[in-house]
Length: 159
Image (cartoon, rainbow, N blue to C red; front, side, top):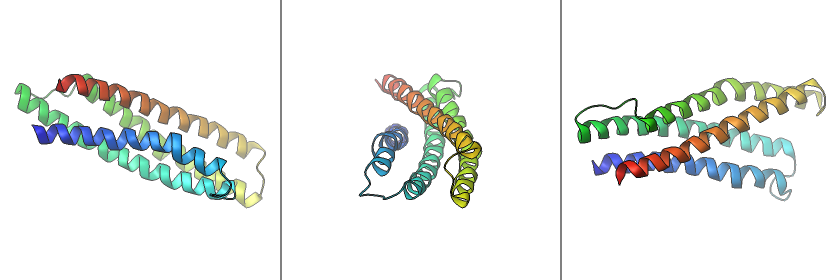
């Protein structure tokens, strides 16, 4: 059971830690310090690629957490508890990440390419891009808040 608990905690650390690093260190740094990346196109490329990696890390971490959580409840309670609150929150986190990765991010890539090809940072493409960016930020914030709740629930579960 110690291994299962360790894997559950590691999954949460990787996922939530990655979100915190991305939101508070990586994204602000590449867009606000010109010496690092001289233009927003390069900064956008770094953030876009980093977000994709973060999403896949989150997907893997969520699956690992759910499998280990189910096995942990089976070992401890002699039954699976798929409807435990922490499991439901992780499932919702996964849904939010999948929406971001497979619905919002691809649309943002198309809009960025259109804006770069025309050389225009104004107009309807920019408005739609900003709208998609707002939704992306909301989803990532939601995942972070839910993840912190899962951390609290998991800590209570192990005490």
